[in-house]
Length: 93
View 1 (cartoon, rainbow, N blue to C red):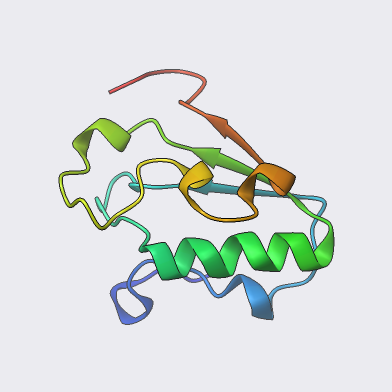
View 2: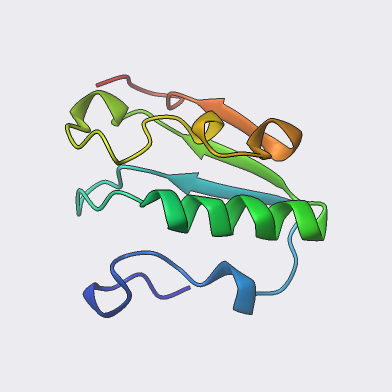
């Protein structure tokens, strides 16, 4: 799954095969890329449509300073239906 500067380090989940569980970390380490509200909305909607569980790793959320960028996936409508938010299994920023 390509995550490069060309796609702003955000994979196009809609083009990937369905998965039971989708793991996503934002902000991302090591790039520091942070998913926008629109990107997270698209990801949540894709998981809802496919019946996938979204595991959202928010370990680096304390570093988000832009008020327009969600710190939690639960800021996205519909996320409570499909998402489990964790703060990493090994660290918290």
